Length: 458
Image (cartoon, rainbow, N blue to C red; front, top):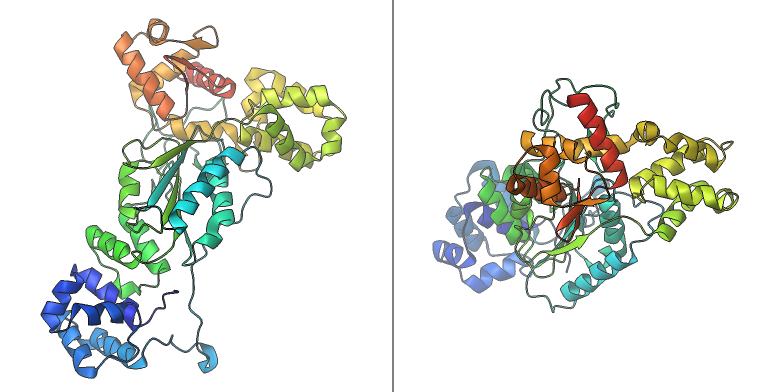
């Protein structure tokens, strides 16, 4: 059933704002719980005038609010007239951004999400489902969430909601000294990008979206008038959970900073699915399903590159293409940047870009195309590190070999083994180190970035 912005929804919103249960409102107004339930569900088209007046008294309505409440009750469940007196159709939110034109190599992750969707829509799920798509910078978590939303959205008949939480937006000065001058606000989308040879200088940053503001946006999307949105955050949360109780909704919460930002935004209804993207696994979210979004397989990386440049161009130099994919570390963001650079230079052979990327000192600078910037994606995670962890990250780039343990890390970073191990785990959570059992490893591009920071800051 599609919910309309009529008397029933208005009654439910007001009751939620006051923090009243249906039983409490029934007792205060002298009505029955069944009557209130049926009115909120829109099954009572024209409530009795005396009942409406008693409800208005119980809700403490006066003035304009009372007049509107009574007027909606008289109008029944019909939506208000639109332009020219034609009845407006109920609006089901459909807020997902456009999907990327080519999503490859994510069949396993999409299969997990499809299975969870089946559990939500067929009623076998007992609670609202929460999925955390997490992974290092540039792995395409946002693209995966949006693509999955478009593929699965039809199962959620009451709509799809989208929130950009700006969790990686800068909020403080850099980890060692000074603030970052430029920043990225989503995986790979920068506000300017920082060059390797420039220290970060002071700037003010907006920071992540406050949960209370996020809740207000969700309530607006669900048809709650501005004047009915409660002030206190906890009341907004109660109202949001009330309004979503009987709905089938898909919610995409993109770029979450931490668990505290996400928790208030989770519906309690078992027919809702929430997809959260974050660089961190958000282990504090109880009951969430976690899906790691990692590097692409070599064949998937090739297909992604071909979708941008054209298959014939890559087939002309398969050896160079394979080398290009590895120089990009099979990181989706880096491959998209490389593909866009080749697409914008139709006269370049693949070997020309390979030659530019071959020098590690130039690689991150070359992996920039418009506002897609691999270095900026790493900047976002780095600037949120504490000073000690940032120092461990920089000096870890001096460790020889592909993998290392906490003992070797401690020997080159000048901290004790326990502190080195704790810092390494923080770096894994931030997506700047890769776990290898009880050992750790750099992604090739991240090691280059760490060495740049070491040269600049030490």
